[in-house]
Image (cartoon, rainbow over all chains, first blue to last red; front, side, top):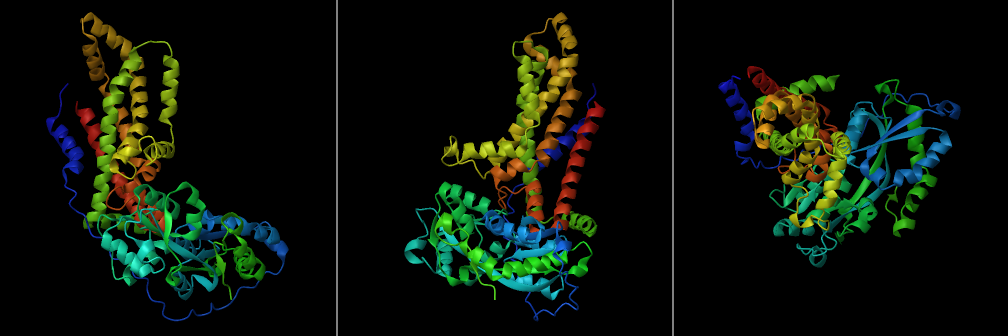
Length: 309
Length: 229
């Protein structure tokens, strides 16, 4: 039973390496990527493909809708989509991911239609010809939630001023859980730190989770931390958590959703006719009405406010 | 296909850049998985060996449970631990959720049945012979177990390697109890899941490639060592 000492030594060294290396590298957060400015209003795509007017042809086709987690998790899509599916006989497959991934699916031609809430980036897609025209659909709003003890004193000092609120949180180094996942919500949050004069938040109190809204709310609840959430997701979880709304109603916290059909030139697999129907349908007065009814029964207030023009 | 090509390029870039943030993620991945596997091995090797040679009522049932636990979905383990660790939960006072400790515990729970099962299987076949040998030599029970472990070391080694592979590749449990917090509980698999959700496909693939390289390195070393012996 001869044991090669050198090999054993190498093995032990390799295994021990990660334990020995000091984790002094508390690297500062990478600079937030500034969304590139939108240069010009989008050029109209050269030629609209022929619209299929025959419903028959759309029957039993599949439409892939890439959207953000908030529309699916809140239950909005379950509430409004059945009318679309019934009307046209189109089966809608919802892929609910972060805004970044949803838009990327449009760029890759993996989805037929996009419903997201990061206007600047959405307009970039239109400019680049990845999608056709973008339309406003609805908005919802963000709220700042936190532990009832409110260590940063938001409720007393800044119940409706998000810039002052963020400054207070940073000043008190009160724990704050960030989505940290490049989602629309995350990008919004970063812009608020910027406008509140905090700049790029860093330090032990600033916790970057890299997860979805629901997970982040749960984490904030567990850690007795603040976080910025969309009202819909918060209300749907309210009964199970201690977090309370400590700041709301600031106009900069409004969150605009837009819809875009993916450019059919990306390939024959794009179900453009169905996507076109979807865009028309979600902007139609009846659907807009339906959106404003969603949540009223359960929470006593609407979660999304339609504003299609 | 572009994602794979740029994935390889990004992987190469990640390695040569030695980006401190990425390095920290790799380091934490290895610390968590190695610690969990090590602790699991301490429990599972003696237990599996003992189970392989000992006969007692209810043993078949116990073995069946261990086999079931071997295929336990990590996300279920994560969920159960998460609920136990909740602030208002039974173990809430320790404040374990969203810490590296919780991740180690989760992987420990995941890996222990696997090592136990594989060790048990090997011992069951060859154990009785070795036990007889020990008896003729007049060994004490402790010495018998020691002899068994020595004789069955190749099987034990593959049990540990299997367990480590499972720990390192797991994402469901550590995502739930760890929370993927940047700089604290973010490891390679949770990074990949996060990058995918962000639409950063090629960086996700790159991280996966680095993860595979590390596994390859560790496995090569372990097996090389085994053959040398």
